[in-house]
Image 1 (tube, rainbow, N blue to C red):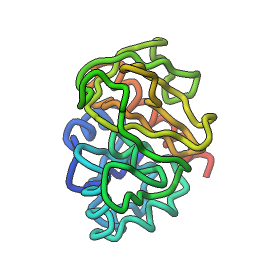
Image 2 (image 1 turned 90 degrees about the vertical axis):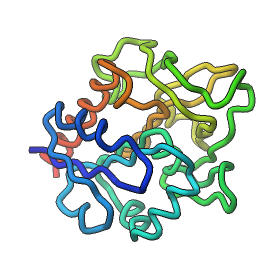
Image 3 (image 1 turned 135 degrees about the vertical axis):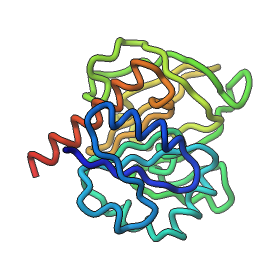
Length: 205
């Protein structure tokens, strides 16, 4: 059975994410330290709250270096996506994990913040969106979004006052700004696709 480690950095819809992954056939382990990552086929980095608070928790739990060194499939959700980048304007100091080049910036063109509710995602043919209709709606709760240094990593965009990046993929590192665990059928399909990618990578290893 595909083993997925869901990182507990103190802020995330851990129960909903875990149930969604289990429905897709994964065995879920909550990771509150480096030891829990051992033997994992994939990692989910969830997020609710702020990048600053999440980074402080990751440092305190000794997870920063293990995450940076992880070479298998990794899915960042909302703040978890933002943590993958070099820097976030949301917190003082701003340093994030630096796993994908770019910066997280406030949605300055947004008509109202935070951006809460359902919005369409224009996606590419990346496997994380397999079986998801083009322009399918997903659930968002955020005020910041990433600006990748390399536009080629963008695999999904959404419009809220202006277009912003809502999904990225850089090798095995995938991130979505929306919450798949709160996005009904389309969201469960995204989680299921991630489990399938983890299983495929494990077979190839």
